[in-house]
Length: 544
Image (cartoon, rainbow, N blue to C red; front, side, top):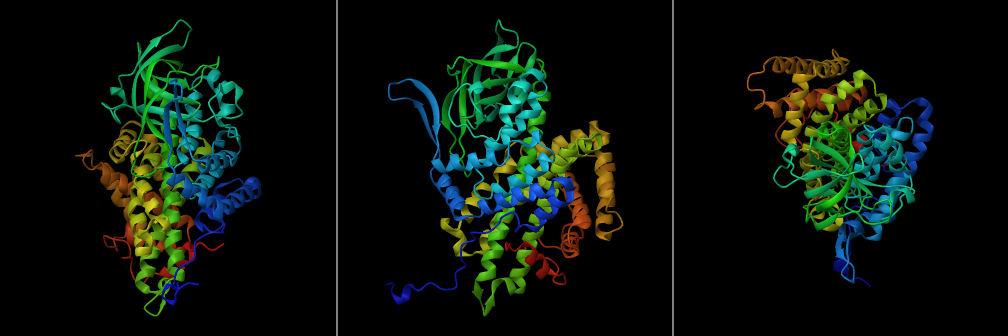
């Protein structure tokens, strides 16, 4: 029997046993808005099942165990043979297997696949973000491989399979495969053209022997990898299988696993190639152009990952505040806390709404939408991922000391929060990429302006922001030094236009007043007090 001094009161219950999808009104509405009506019933059923699974106590425990038991590298077996294997906790395999079976690598093979996958990715990675890396890389490898029809015909059915077939075996003997990527080298970082890995042609046409070091190689237990190396004709893309067709293991020496800030359940590695067999993808000297479609798809996944993390952080903060009492009432009813929660909810909804609009553009595939994506993806990757960390910090603070302890799950979200801003090109890379699009692809700017123009006249603050953005775009003096400011404004205008068109008036009004109208402080919780903040907070409450 517990002592009377240990009686526990005034604590929020765990946020568990709920439908993560149905509780996210902004996400549900985005799916209904963008998906073909004929696909809606099927998609709702899939996402509801996934949402309930994600919110279950069992899956949340899988996420905790995968995070607390990070992968281990085994370079040799007991006899001294080099094996280069990474061992994962069983919970990791359960999470990854469920993600594959839920179609998170199958977007390219079904109608409305990108939108459905994006919604599923936002839902499922709220259980544990670390296993999202192999899901993302496998999904994103498809467009790069399509530059070689023969390779695509061989590998695409395996990549888009909904079967998680664990273990290293020849790909032809597996019901489904996973892919990773290796571009980054010590001396180059984001400047991949500085790569020094060499590719020497072999007798068989299109095959090469690769020698070099990759400082950052994702998901080393995958079945294949897209890597960049210097062939005689210049920087080239290659497919490197882990196991060759005859069953022997390719030379793929995992030197070490990265000891990372967050993303602990995921194995990121340094690898050595020493006569490693590879198959050329695309033409020699066209490596960056070949792999750029993979990079674009993974950048969208960074936006999705950030939106997922923000949603979970906000859900935890609102849930806690709805149950915790202080100063004579529920925290959620206190005007100042309500302001903080509403501000966080705006950031989360704007991120989700933008992410899903990008996914819908991928499904459309038309020339106008491709031009729109060329500007919108780097803008979203820059801005949404950068907003993730301050949201995680403020949401953690809403839980006070409870949020600072590991059991709350908030520290794990905080450690994960900077990741998506860094991976697949950090902030400056995105800003410079957007500048290149502005300078070289005028159709991209035209598509963006047509998109935001759909909301013109609906809110004077949005109209003013569009006008100011056009003035800034007309002034090219010192444009590189101003690139971050420009990309931020492009992203905010795009988010504002989407919310004005699609969100409830209370949400759009609060976003435009603060993010576009300038009636906002330098920290969360500084929204104009005259806004309908209670409605904004209630919309974000995770009750389904």
